[in-house]
Image (tube, rainbow, N blue to C red; front, side, top):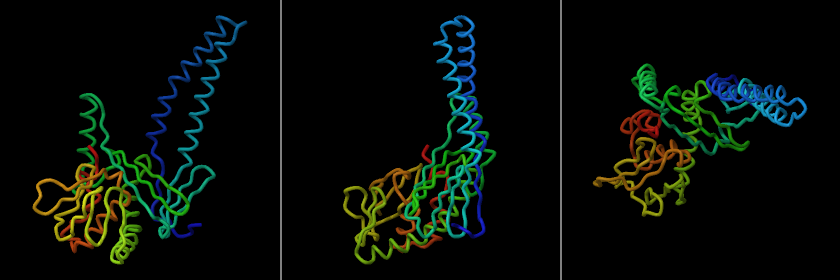
Length: 278
C-alpha cells in the first residue's frame, strides 16, 4: 500500500459522462418508444416490443455502469508511487518499479467552420507562454507500466499534464541513469525504432550515428527525429507514441552527447508544438 501523503489527485472529467449520456439517451428513448408502440399495436404478439424493451434496458444498464465507473475512478500520485482506483479495485505502482512510460498527444479537431472557430477560441484562451501541453485542446494518453501492470491516464483525468510532469520528474532520472550505465558497460538499449549504444544512436536497421556526428535528437509535430550534423534531412524518425520512454531517450542522448540542459532547453519533451501530432 502507498501510505505517503498524496501529491496530486486526478478526478475524472464530466465531459465523457455527458458525451456518453447524450449518445445513449437517444437509443434508449427510441427503443422505449418502439417497445411502447409494438405493445400497443400488437399486445398478443409481444416479440417486437420485447426486443425494443430489452435494447432499452441494455442501453440503460450500460449507461449506469459507465457512470458508476467514471464517478468512482480516481488516480492519485504519491511521493512513492501512483495508484488508480475504480470502484472497489485499486492498482498501485511504486515509482521504483516503473519501467515504461508511453505518451500520446493529438490535437483535438472539431469539424466544420464553427467547430474550427470554437477550437481556435479555446486554444487562444488557454494558450500559455510556456506552450505546454493543454488537456483542454489536446487528447492526451499516458500509460505507466510497472510490476503491478499498467495505469492509464488521459485528458479525461483532470490534471493529466501536471501528472505527466510529476511522472517525468519521478521516473526519468532513475531510468536515464540505468540506461546510461547499461550503455557504458557495452550493452544496447532499445526505444522503439531507436537503439542506443556506445557507437551512437541508430534508427531502424540503419547504422548508428556517432554522438560526435549528432546535431540533435528532437521532437517535432508528434514525431521523434535524429538529425546528423551537416545533413539537410533527418536520418530517421518515429511517432512519439511508438517510442517507449521517449523522455528517457532524450535525456540519455543529452548525457551521452555531452549536451547541457541549458543548451537543450527546458521541458524539451513537454513543448506542445513538438509533442502533439497534428
